[in-house]
Image (cartoon, rainbow, N blue to C red; front, side, top):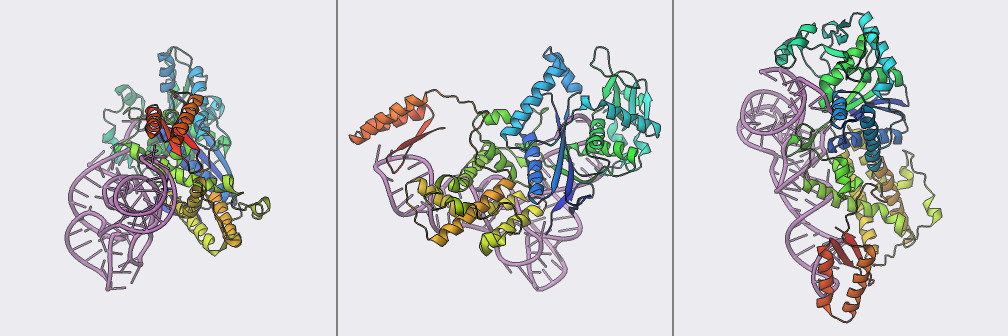
Length: 499
RNA sequence: GGCGGCAUGGCCAAGCGGUAAGGCAGAGGAUUGCAAAUCCUUUAUCCCCAGUUCGAAUCUGGGUGCCGCCUCCA
């Protein structure tokens, strides 16, 4: 089976066939950089990161472009609020965006164009649309005329004529007066007094929201791209309008496949800025939620379905990740105990797709099941199920060794286990799940110094040696009240973790 | 009102006509001064009604409930 994806524009599950064999051009709608990213953004970019990783793993050459919208009403307002420049706002948020995405292990896009740096392309495209009659200029504003684009509504399944009553009250009278059709949308917005602006053939102003994507796709990737990505909330009007602009200009399809991710919900409702029910990525990471927990949380649901965010589901993901992580750590930490030396390590090369021989029939089957799930419209929850099955014996051995058990394996057993470990490392990496070193954004809110903890542990050890358990328990409780949990290991060593 | 989506055990969630993956929680056992962790074992007939079929969670029709988009939004 080959990769199948649900194409929003046809509403069907389709075989994915690149325009040029072996190559994939992807455009992903990015963020408007007026504020920090929240969990909804995290979901979107984690899911598309997995798509990208999977395509690369399959051997395709992927070019991934994602934009920054760095000029817009919200940015202008934010700058006014903070009494600073829009440049300061956008630079700051772009930096934080990168920090957040890097922390989540999201591969950086190959290119990240910005609206304010693509103005030439934007103006060219607008000129072209005016020239061919698809757009018109009114007093320094330029609008796209949707009636000139007969296929308008094809992505979102809207019939404009039956929609007209929806527009009542949603646009101002002034707008209605200026626009030929109430659904016409701005390609270029005339600057109001004292607003930041850029020069254009139609006077000072700034680009409308949708036009930057059309211009960037053309400039960065060409007329027709393979895949266009975004959140489901962008289908209308954003992507509908992008299609109208690009296709009215070129006469060709903008993208072959349109993919949209489902929303993150809180208590059954969409997480959004306007509802105020959002949690930023930063806040979660700073609270000690690990990036991989977040990734697992996101990937446990299918990307097109809504995903409810609750404390419980996040905790469940954290526990799940701990288990998967102990399996991934097995070869990293205990290779010596298992007799995996450097030669046995290097017998296989990672990324060959037809490696049934290296993995054997049992593992080959698991690998195949994983691939079948992923090929079926990126069914990551199914794929994770397979991963947990592979992980189970590895996790068990990893934990048993950690708890002081000595594991003795036959040579053949050891070899099978090694291959199993290699398999899970390889497949997990496809989902971006990798053993992590540290969480760079974690703020340690320690009430107590590490050295202090060690002192108390030593004191407790001494008390235990003297069978003074009352005192030992008192120390345990004291540390517990400061968020420190003690774990006695069978080898007589006491470890601790911050809760 | 228009368009689209969803409904599976305590919670999350696969399943795409052949008799319910997986994670979390729970239960039982092992281990433990206590605690935690860990190991082993274990837990469902799929919102309702009707139909198609030898056979349906899966297909069709009709309900009910929830969500998203139609204004900025990942």
